[in-house]
Length: 209
Image (cartoon, rainbow, N blue to C red; front, top):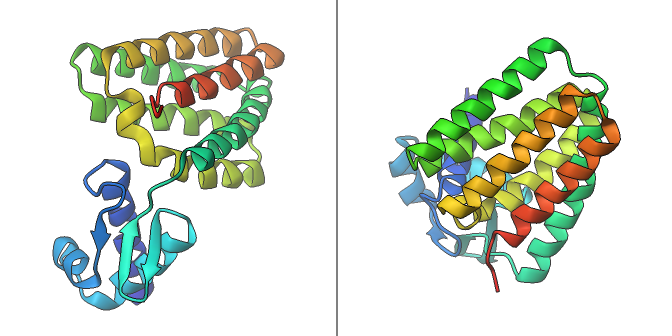
């Protein structure tokens, strides 16, 4: 039971971080988080340890834990690694896409366009993650997917800065449109190139400088 509670605590805390409800640099305590999640402190303590291990939380001292705040050099490295991995996943996916997969990606794309029209940045962000994860799933390379998940978690700490503007979302939509065409044509080289540009564009849209 404790394991399932700690997993739930981790997932909900991770969601708070990735949704921006817990911001970079914000202090985290077992007591406050337990109250927020409506849980005892034991599973929350384990969840905090796990989130420190995956890089979403950072232990500053024995008594101070904060939501991790990355240096620009770290962000640049994370995106460079993600670019290489997702480009490879896209190349694999291009050769393995079924009609069902293509239809699912297209539906996600249409939903993202609708979210953009409604200026629902949170919905767009969640759909964007689903779009990428569908590609990783189709690539059918579990170890590659695990590596991508690891770096994606860190890069998503900046989600609010990369997509929270009309211009940035429009650029993302256009890039997804091009990716869809490459997948429809089963062009693995083009899919790889376009994903590489898409991730690189995501880094530039962070507007960190």
